[in-house]
Every structure is written in structure tokens, then in C-alpha cells.
Image 1: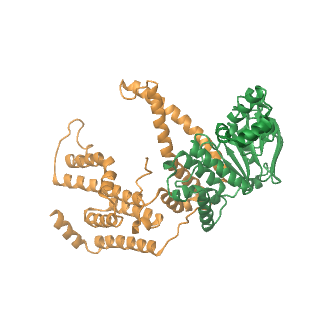
Image 2: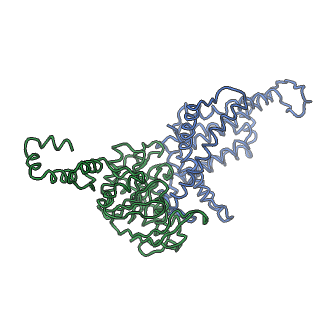
Image 3: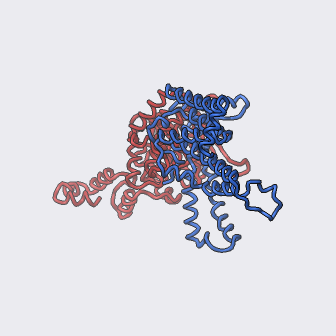
Length: 292
Length: 276
């Protein structure tokens, strides 16, 4: 478990702290989304989880290891994998397979074992064909996957992803989402920093940050109920949620904390009641389905 | 597509050699080229030619490798051919063009030395991937670690520089386009104006490079990098092929020495044969 207690951090002692008393726990296997406007301290917070930054006050521990204990730092960094925003700044190898070998090499694993880990990870992410390629020759989506692979190769228990879908096209985003789901299903805890609420439909828990504090921390449904708070922070509510809010505004008895089409369909049909259900079962079913 | 160096993957004997063997051989050959006199030239040239054929170098690669310094080589030849006495011996501003056989031969020889150097380097860089080169250099320099020279960090720096060269080139291209779109002019105007225009490229590029370096440092630390020992995917290991190659080099050097010391007459004969 990752445990953050009363974390305070400031780059300069005189300035307003970037993190002003954060407390949270991330359990193994959880999928936590971290959202908030620019400058709310999301990236600064996650840099504390693997000891890239150390708390000015308070403490951060990973599976019982305090990040301030220098002896534990290598193991903490192995357990808490971190994928940064710009893949171009984190791929260090001259070829894809050499980049994947970077982390295991830092752990001083023997070459045979590095080879096994690298091949395993490449296959898992479907990158085997790119093993000998020069990173610069890859597409944006491929670079992103290589950046993720470079971290996964160290078998982390927690995976921090800082806006993993930035600059990606639709296909690239879907690919990243399905990988995140797959890894989470395998038991790796995900901490997913996002801008767009739509990106975190799979998250089991959402933490909303603003000005270095945690504003909201709860299930996606509860967070989406706070539509006004989200909007005041400049965070766009997903279109499907917005649709429900507008329906509710017109007097329809539907819940607005909806993120998926399935949930919306249930809400709408329920609110239509028996008549609506009959309508859907009848001739208009296809039409109603396609409209949603 | 930016190509990193001239490396061309292949499977020739030269490609498969340990990078350490290749680096040492190239250094030795370069030394021989500069120490050598005319009699050695033919032997060294043939040896180099055999290496290039074995490495199945293409003509275009050979030409490409010589092109950047072609002008320099021609200049060197002309200087030696036209001013055999040297510039310093003749009074300033009264260059006397004085073409002699010795001068032309001397010019040809010095040009040959430079061409051989370039060809040596080409054989090395075409057949050795940048990774192998860095790994080989690191291993060869490792004894310097005892003198507290951080050889491992130096090798990491070189490989990062190679990795980020194309990234920075691409960034430069992007900045250039952005500045052109804002009406910058890099081609015309006085020297001062053009220098200013160049600064409008350099400043954002440098700022960007620093930002990237910061991110890179974080990313490397996050992946467990620290000052200390680390392992790599491929550890260098000497094979029978490498030992054979080293033996060939030793024989070649010994051969040159024998020719030079034991058979001066034969050398003179060969010399006479070529340059009568």
C-alpha cells in the first residue's frame, strides 16, 4: 500500500506550498484517477510516490518503506513505475530493446534475465516487431507504448501514468486504455493522471485536486455529481454526463453521475418507466439505441 | 529520417567482431599510417582494401565518408606540391610556386594518410552500431576508472547524446518553421541580421534542451538509474573470431616491421619499382 500522510511540499520555502497537506492511501490493485486543473499539484504529488521528490513535511511510504530512507529507494522505484508525459524525454536506449533493458540493467540483473524480461514485455505489449528499431523512427503511439514497456519490464506493483493519452489519436488512445485495463486486471495498481474525465471511465476511484489539496476523493459517480465544482475548475464533464444533466434540467428523473452509454441507457429507460421499456422492446428499439 | 551515424546492419565477419577489437585495430592502423613511410603504404592500403571488401562496404558509403574532407585533402596536396620548402621559409607575400617531384610525392603521401584515416573510421562506423561503439569504448577505458575518471558516466553521456541528436534536430526544424511563420528570415540580409536570426533559433533550442534534460534526469532516476554498477542486455565477450582477428593484426604489424628492418634492400627495391 502507498500511504501519504500530511504531505507538504514547496519548491521555495517562501512561496505558497505546491502541496498543502495531502493524505491518501492507494491499495494494491486499485485504479485511481487523479484529476485537477493545471498547476494543482498532480505531477508534484506523484513524484513523491517514488522518491523523486521528498516531503518537506509529512511522510510517504510504499509497502511500509519510507521514501526518505535512501536504502529503500531502489526498491521503491522498482515497485512504483512511472510513465511521464513526453515519451521522447524518457526513452534512453538507442534501440527499443536496449531501452527496455535500461531499468533491469540498473537493477544489475544478469544479461540472460534481462533478455527474458525484455522479450516477455515486448510480446505482452505487441512490440516484438520493433525490438531493433531506433526510438526516433517510431510513431507517437509506438513511442508511448515503448515508454510504458520500459517501466513494465521492472514488474512494478504500482504504475503511475501522467496523461498517458496526450497527443495520441483515437486508435492510440484506445490501445493505451485497453493496456491499462489489462494491467489493472493483472493486479497492478494504476494511478492515472488525466485532464479529460472521459479518459478515466475505467477508474474505480477519482481524486480531484486543486491548489495543492484534495478537493474530492471518491467513486466516479460521486465525483460526477459535483458537476458545478468540476466546471468551476475548468474540467469538462464528458458529453454523456452532460446529456444526463441537461435531461435532468428539463425535469427528467435521471441520475447525472453517468460515464458510460450502458449506464445512461439504464437511467433513461428506467425513467421512461414501463411505457418506455415497452417502447424500447417494440419497434423503436434500434432507433432508441442508436440515438444514445 | 535521421540516420544515426553511418551504421548499416549486416552479418559480415567485420560486423560480428567485438567492438573492442575493431576500435583497437583502427587505432593501430591509424598509428601505422602516420608512422609509415612510402614502402608501407602499399601494404597498408591493400590491407585496408581487404577490410573494406570483407565488410562489403558500398562505393557510395566510401565516397560519402570522403566527401566532407575532400576539399581539405586537395588543399593539403596542393600546399605540399606547390610549396615544397614550406611556407615559413619563404618570405611573406612572395610565395614562390616551385613544383618538384618531391613536393608532389610528399603531397600525395600526406593526402593518402588522411584518406586512409577516413577509410579506417568508415569501416568502423559502418559495421559497428553506436551502442556497440559506446560499449566497446567504455570497456576499453574502464582501467581509467582507477584514476577516478568516471568512464561509465562518460559512456552514458555519449550514448544519450547519440540518442537525443535526432530529437534535437527535429526540434530545431520545428522552431525554424515556427520562426519562418512569424516572418523570420534566415537567408538574406547582412551578416549581423542573419546572426540575429540564428539566435532566434538557438535560444529556444537551448531552453528546450535544458527542459528535456530535466525531464530525462527524472525519468532515468524513476527507472532506477544511479551512480553505480549496472548491467546491459549484451555483455561483450571475446570469441574465437575476435582472437583470430587480433592475431591477424599482430601478424600484419610484425610483417611491416620485418619488411622495414630485416630487408631494407627489398624495401628499396619495391620503392624503386613504384617510384623509380
